[in-house]
Every structure is written in structure tokens, then in C-alpha cells.
Amino acid sequence: MPTTTDYQYTILARDYTLGDDQSLPFDDPFHVDLRVWYTPRAQPVPIMMIIKQAPLPHGQLKSHDTARPALKPLLSFLSTAGINLDDQTVNAISYCARALSSQPIRRTSHGLVVPGIELLILLDPDAVWEEVNTVRPVPATDACIKALEKLVLGDGGSGNSVDRCAVCFEDFCHGSEIARMPCSHVYHSGCIVQWLKTSNLCPLCRYQMPTS
Ligand SMILES: [Zn+2]
Ligand SMILES: [Zn+2]
Image 1 (tube, rainbow, N blue to C red):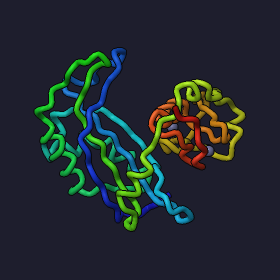
Image 2: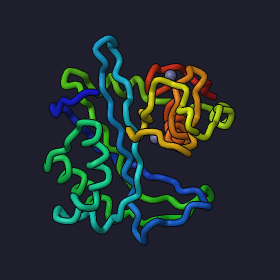
Image 3: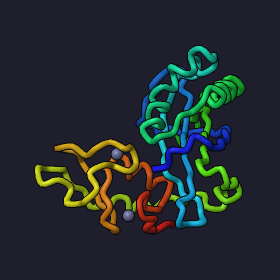
Image 4: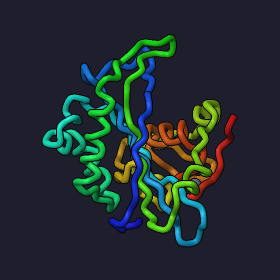
């Protein structure tokens, strides 16, 4: 796991569509989609290491004083992975949230569209954004996501040497629903399903799931 604090980041404005079955978590949701990229030593191509998406209260992100507490769940998630965002980055997120204040939540035929940002963090100081852009993730097909082998973890463990989910960095515990990829890597079901909807590559070995 990289522990460098020397990283670059970029913030892109992006709309997010909530399905009709999803209720609004706040009156003023603002979607923050966090993606961390890094370049493993043995590979010339950056890989996406983390995706974490969370709706946050838009109002709280607009002020510097309230932005940090509002971002706390995401910030502490990142620090679990050894990444500590400085105040400058938090201020940049809050600046973007303010700049996007005028965007109303709107209803379309696909569901509710809420404003948001994609926060991309590049851990490798030598990597360039063009590389990240050329390896933009492609989602796996719904069919192969549905076909994942699911199991509920019993006393026997995952049957795998990995005892931690590489998507959320939390340990597997008794009763966790886990899913096994064809490459035999296991993750929490919810974590890997969310991941595969964005990227068809196994987070640990880059095994390729089918794309449409
Ligand atoms: Zn997980
Ligand atoms: Zn794998």
C-alpha cells in the first residue's frame, strides 16, 4: 500500500443520477466520488485503487469550517489507506461545492439528477493525467456482475489468503456476504458490485471481467 503524501489531484464537476428507488439522504445531496490512482512499481500503467462514493450535505460543503467535518467519513477512509488530504485539497473541494451551488436537483426520465464532483487523486508524483485518462475504467456487464459466486462467511473463513476487502479496507467478519471473482479474489459483495459497475478489472490482479 502506498504511503506517499506527495500526490496530485484534480476535481471534475459531474452529475449523478439516483435511481427512482433511491431516496434522498439529505434535502441537498451533493455527490462526492473519490478515485485514487497509483502506478505499481512493476507496471508502467496507472491503476485505479480506490473508489468511494458518498452523498454529502451540499450546504455543509460550501463553508471551509463545515466542509472538513462533512468530509470526515471520506477523509478517514483515505487515511486508512495511508493517504492524508491536506487543507488545500479540502478547501478546493469546498470551493467546487460552492461553485456548483446554483445547480438544482432535477428529475429526468432516468431518476433524480444531483450535482457532484469526481475527486481524482494521483499518488505517483511522476505519473501524468493523460495516462489516467487513457486507462479510464470500463464497467463490467450486468450479467457477469449478477453471476458472481456469492457466499456468506462462516467459521471456515473465506478459503482465501486474503482476509481483508481490498475495496473498503475492512476485515471480513463472520456473516459477511462476500463475492468471489473468477480470478478467485474475494471482496464484500456490495463493494465489488459497486466497483464492477465502474471498472471491469479485479482491484487486486487486474483480471478482466467482460464488458459490453
Ligand atoms: Zn468491502
Ligand atoms: Zn483478482
